[in-house]
Image 1 (cartoon, rainbow, N blue to C red):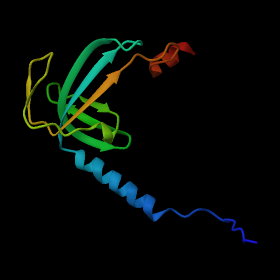
Image 2: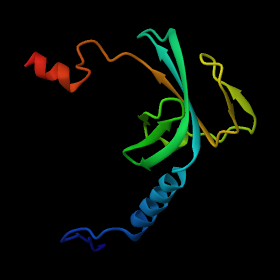
Image 3: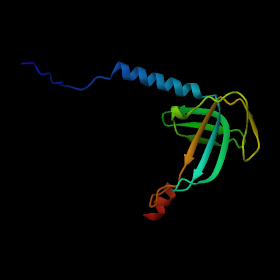
Image 4: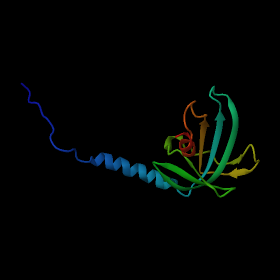
Length: 133
């Protein structure tokens, strides 16, 4: 009969897991200083396009919590989700922003997002939470 093994005590941190985390963190740090073009498509609950917005700026911080971008035009900092798979290296060239007509030359990265309204009954922000209690 085969002997059965049972683990006792706490699990030790995996060296492989740490290596993967270090690699991921390195990828986020490499984003800082890159110029990014971000496109937003606003849709209604049925998926119909309502509006578009495009922003370009410099990545000032990046971590698994989010990617922060300083907008070229306004200087405001906005965040996008930290989804590395949603970042694309665009072909070199001139990109015209549809609404403003500005031309962006050779951005380092490109990312797009579809934005849907919050589900019905969902509280959107903390100010609404305070007024509803």
